[in-house]
Length: 120
Image (cartoon, rainbow, N blue to C red):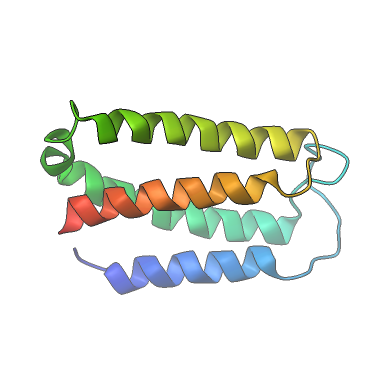
């Protein structure tokens, strides 16, 4: 797992940039309350670079994950991922105040399990 610290730093810096207050000048609007600024876009790009880099490492180790492909846990995980992305998209597009937090929590849990299995 080469460059682990670099990937982690990219993720953390990207999250910090997204969390910082901005001028509220949106590049585009997804809803009345949501839309990324240029600052948010830079943070998201850093996060996506680190995420894709991690996913390439997971893909290289996919044999460990495939051993679980017929289990109930795997199928439940797919359901939870679909539910989580649905919560995130619905809450952002329709301005539901806090439902995106539950979606992010589910996604983080599933990704944590994937990374644990792939890298153990």
